[in-house]
Image (cartoon, rainbow, N blue to C red):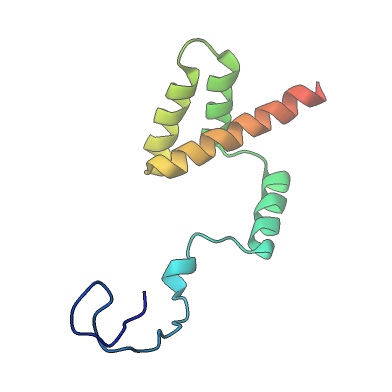
Length: 103
């Protein structure tokens, strides 16, 4: 919203030009670069799943009612945050889907 130079009203105040401020590194924190993505995929292929990820996969394989909720709870205990747990659960489901497609 630009100011009009009038002392009253919604657009009151001295007319000034809006500055364009460069983004801070903290605002770009969640973005993942192409190189980082590639490295993580490569490490995943070479090293395979970690023990807790294998356990998550096992919980998914055994299935039953509420298996996704148990996966979430286990992942949250290991990873610490809600968002990371959800992301890890989706990642493990994707891995399981690939395994089933291959078989």
